[in-house]
Image (cartoon, rainbow over all chains, first blue to last red; front, side, top):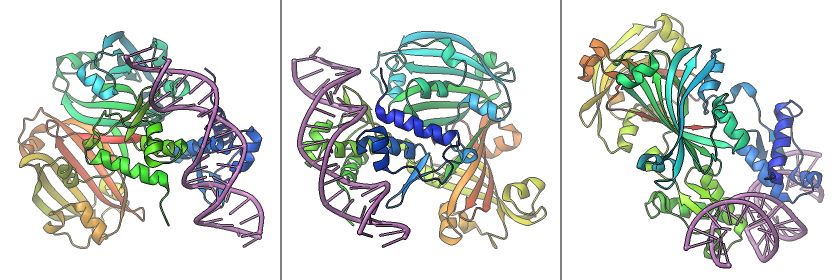
Length: 234
Length: 234
DNA sequence: TAGTGGTCTAGACCACGGA
DNA sequence: CCGTGGTCTAGACCACTAG
């Protein structure tokens, strides 16, 4: 279970950027220098650097060098943000109550979303999410057992996305489908509202850096308590 | 000025996916097979494949193979798309009925959104938008008179965004706020639904390449007829 | 066990940018 | 000119998945 060399190189450079040793616009060591520093081949260095370019930490300029591209405040505007991260940004306290964790066989829909075989086992987690103790979201999460061998409550204690990036792999993108729906009896009960109230229904599939979906989640947000902000580029 | 080999490999595979030769879930040739087909080294093949993984066309499964991840409808929707463009993508016919065009003085809210002085004159356009003749959206558009000296119906005949890019300037980004709301008497009438039905309310501010907002629009979409698809990057 | 993708090496030549 | 990143080769061993 040891980490590949290029991951280590990625992490040390990322640290130098995040703790301010490398500032925005700084030129970092050339690829040839890094091969000597880490005593690896140039392709390994390039793999590490290109990953950091894709993550937005660096940019390259042929003939000149590789430079730091890091402006803390502009980061993560158009990006995936989990509920917890979003609540923190609005100075609210996020919490959640897990209703159930169980292993089920993937239905047709779930297997299609997660790109796995139908009948393959997945974890199904139901929970209610609160902002400042007001129920805001009822959520059903499906996680493939091949990626999450075991799922415990503590995974969901903090930011789930941060947990995944620390312990599984980098998250690259997610696809969301957003609809407006009526709550209906069932969800109304969970969210403590009337059955006719509108909900924001968001279906999410999130993907790792190898392109594999690791999460299919159905979220039902209270229309009176939650909105999505989205920045789209032309 | 000749293209690198890995780009060519990328493009041929992308074409096979986009023209339907390769379908969603299909396994493509293994990396070793591709090295022989294109007569290149494996690293070159891997570069091409990994780029396609990052673009969301493929996903890899260690020990199994590389698979197609492509669902036509979900493509390119991370970007700004106007209603017309979106309808065309789903093979529906977009049309609209203009209810009114008038010049008003900007309210506090409007001036804040469009970054203009309060009391400055703006065009206010109300219209209903149809997909295959079903009313889908009631929309109020505010356009600053300084950017649009005169506003006529024909501006809205085709894609408004295309009109702007042809005649005004390039559009760079837009910010959307998405909520779920109950229709209420007024909007229900326009959209031919019941007053308790849920709507997707989207407030949009779009900006030109000089950073100036040129449009503030409030859209009320029928929850039963419309959804937003969004692709977000981490 | 055979085949897949994941990691890595030790070279090579090229195109670009700056002095 | 020299140093930079961009492309590419021809191998190698490993870890995972399936039969």
